Image 1 (cartoon, rainbow, N blue to C red):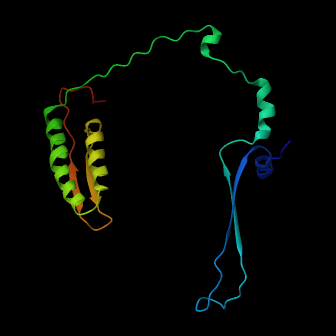
Image 2: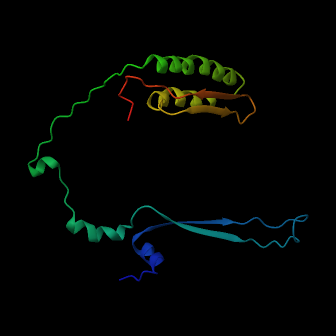
Length: 166
């Protein structure tokens, strides 16, 4: 039995620790203090997800390995259908702007050597049809100083399209 405060002892017995040792940096002349030549070791430990092999002796006697068909059940057949929904005219116009004009700006930055801008373009193309009910913006600044993009995406009035309206 373990006390409430004995968490580390429980992890020692049934959990998984990650332990790392590394050698600290010695002091050199010109830094704080004189060179001593003493090597210091840093030790860190953290708990990892998982269980120790000692847990198997408790689980194995009460574990059942089987399929659902062994119980006499039969699952219904799985059917997947892809339903294509038409975009409203205003959403299609905005999407075309993202798809063409924003891509053109992104490709200018790619030519300057920063390809990470394509992820901003792709995320805008991928997720805008599902988030047209709110105002969003694409705001990308290159870490390499190669350029930036700022693109406003206003709310789309859904009108009679009740699929996206809540």
